[in-house]
Length: 232
Image (cartoon, rainbow, N blue to C red; front, side, top):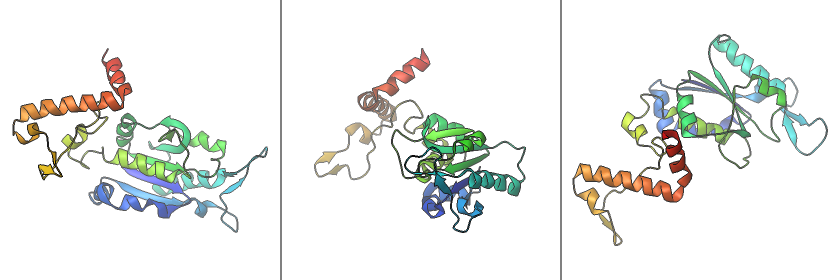
């Protein structure tokens, strides 16, 4: 997968240089390019924002750097007619989910536009394929949401992680993951459940399924309802 990011703060993306994403890049499964939107400005101070028409507080990101950034990427890679998906990170976008992460993991080329200030000029949305929000709250900019989406999607690309690890993830089966324990078996009087020490894999699997359902029913009963609706 090829991922291009348009941002005014390229230095924020250091988390993409470590852990699973780093290994995915080293395997050649993911390539990430980060472009500074200020490089696509034509003013002395490399300004990417301006006052909003009609007045009001805050600044709005100008359309020119974003349009030119997208065109530069297309021209550089000679992909004018090839399939790609342009994503704008915004609080009013579709709420991100594991299902969406799986869909994005199957794309060949993703371009992320990281907004700032009061948002981007509305005309930018004419070249955007999908608007995504990672939650009902407002962040300083689109960089952190972009990293969340990239991380969630990249780990689902075949070869990045073992298949069984992905299949057992929370949300992948419609419920949360089960509780996990490791050594020592007793710590500060807290014991690991006996069934996990029994060696009986059938009983362990049964216990895990039960715990996953109970945990989900307690913490997120809406997920249980969604699964039932999908199966009905």
